[in-house]
Length: 145
Image (cartoon, rainbow, N blue to C red):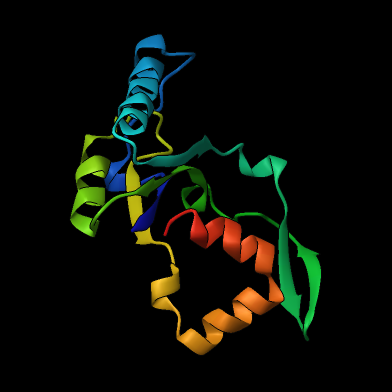
């Protein structure tokens, strides 16, 4: 089962103070956490995201895409980074999230969500996906089979 764990700032009552300047010890803790997940064979991807000012937001209106203000109205809505992990259960994903370091201020809350896999999709829709996107579906789902 693949899960995405996203990191974002918490509410004001759980807010931690972000570090001032570069904190080598804290950075090392994050990298050691990545290394532990990699060594365990569960880490698929892990990235931080640049601040919202370096992004864009595209919305749909009347069936057409267009640029809107954003990407986020409030900094508390900003996703600071993510992990994609491949584990046996939600409980295992939670266990890893509980081990994650914290301290940047943009990772006070970790949200864990299961990614959709071929077993979650009705067979007729799965066949449509394979027909419409044969190389993509093969690269994504056959690697996990």
